[in-house]
Length: 212
Image 1 (cartoon, one colour):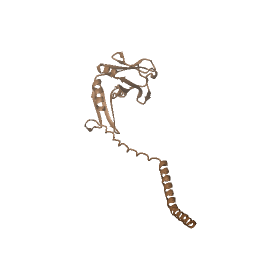
Image 2 (cartoon, helix red, strand yellow; image 1 turned 135 degrees about the vertical axis):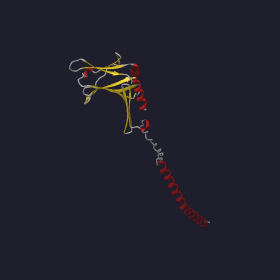
Image 3 (cartoon, rainbow, N blue to C red; image 1 turned 60 degrees about the vertical axis):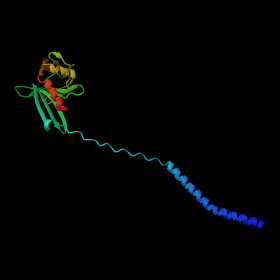
Image 4 (tube, rainbow, N blue to C red; image 1 turned 180 degrees about the vertical axis):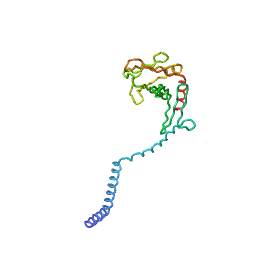
């Protein structure tokens, strides 16, 4: 009976020895799977693909009627001038006054296309004006605005920036004369220029039309 017990223990030991390699393989495989899962959890999620950049459409080329590069038209005492330079269109209306004896320009009023409810531009005055006193605008003997201040002087004269609200340009359409007045630096006497408004309304409308 004792010999049979010894043989039984040996048989169980051999069976256990036969099972150990398989168990070790299973444990190793489980460890590998666990490590792989941990690595997958630690790995950051892939960033979403960036959308393709939007295609920018080129700006339409600036154009004037009949393919012209420049247009110059006269309306009464006003001139409308539109030009295209480097695909940029600029349209202005202006009135220029000169010295009949010398032929030199002594005064000019130039206005841009109206924008955001106002029409901006520049007035050119001759040298000799009192820069500190600025200038006043009168429309048919009535004050127009609060006065202007000189910004700088250049070779042609001294410049007054001007900004006219729509109510002012509407009044100019119906007016006859715009007076620009300043003071002589030496004598203190008034220096005035009378700007005819004949054709102003038509010139302003044409400038707006061409400037679109």
